[in-house]
Image 1 (cartoon, one colour):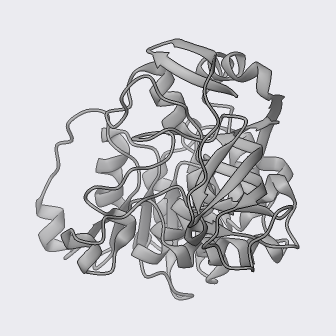
Image 2: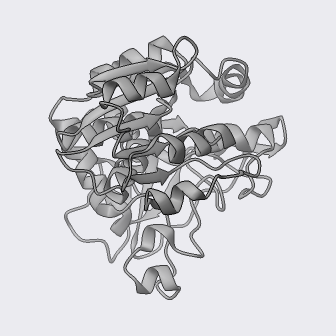
Image 3: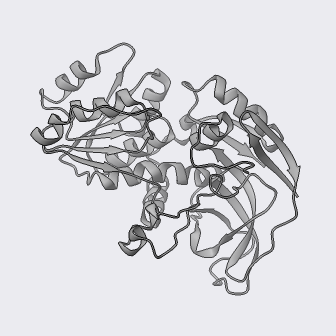
Length: 338
């Protein structure tokens, strides 16, 4: 079968591999649409600290079941279009014992620590599958990236009484915007691209701040009566935005970090104590987050078409990655169509 593989930094090519063998608790899947994610781009650029080469990318998936193993429940059958959770859990580490399998110490995400979905055929455990007869293939392919932002909203314990600022309006940040708005919070979206901010507005943001044209501190003060947002979700991964989150959040506020800072971050720790901040990390997503995002997409309250920057055929995977690397600020989501 044919697969697309990143061989090393800035090196990618198609290769021929044997078809995967189906185990009793697995389904055999034919990918229909696979989304490129920021981690795939980071792998291509050589800056993903979690990846080893060579690696087949892809964990944002809409696929057709073509065969089922002998131990798969009859609810899952050939011909169904599904998405799946790309994470694994050992069941034994401290996180798994605490019921937080999304941050399993030994997690292996498809396309990162193990091969992903950019191949003619893949296998997956039936327990990782999700589906909805009301969602199209491209919507199912968007479920996973939106769940990451949705999980951040869960980590922030967002309610209708909160004002939530989201730093970064890529696909993950948009998931946080939509999830916070779905909980009836007032959402402030912050980005440097007007197109992404307009999409954030359609996803539920009440206010948008272009950080290239306005001072974020002044605008957040104006929009919150000088209190600061009660929640700030960081979805960029820069030291400057890590610092901004703790500086601008309100007293007794919550800060949730999704992004990885690419350099060391220095803090004025006095803010942690004086404000009595809750500072939380957010990693991957839970099964419930997948169900939450599916309900959100089924409601029609998410601007699916606006999020998709472009769709390219499977044969043009390499070109899509190199073009994305050259147009990062204006690209939200690239879909690969099989």
